[in-house]
Figure 1: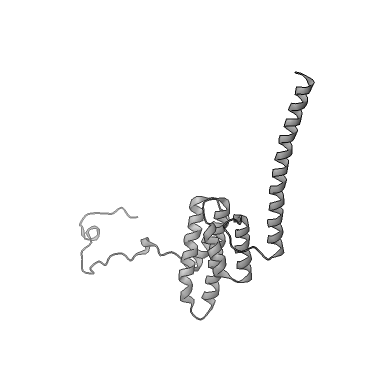
Figure 2: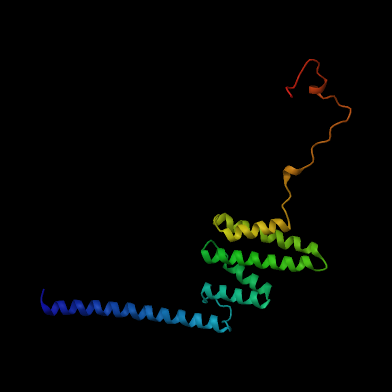
Length: 179
């Protein structure tokens, strides 16, 4: 291979590496600007080209500021089976539980039932995708303590007639083997 050809190959490789570095640098700079806008507080308006991480941060900021309904809407738009979607589900269930606790302590505690049931269902959805999500398990258990699920097995036994005969007690010469 001639030195001229070798020089062209080296310059070509250098040009490819420089282009990749420029693209990566532009991507990093854009991420830095998004992070800076998240930290500074004023977040961009809801756009489709806004990264999901920024929308998640918006939802978290709205939940912290007390705008629960807006935060729930943003979390709902992020829910999918990705790790960020799972975190959005988990956070929306936590937000519903916080609302339920406030409502339960208020004048009409019965209105908290729907919020608790919805939170329990969302925790179960999270656990269906990731059964090892221990925070969701713990919070589901706490929600169960606030409002236990009705057990179908705890149904009252069927009524028996008082005057009905019981075979084991009326049979002559039969010992049920009790001590």
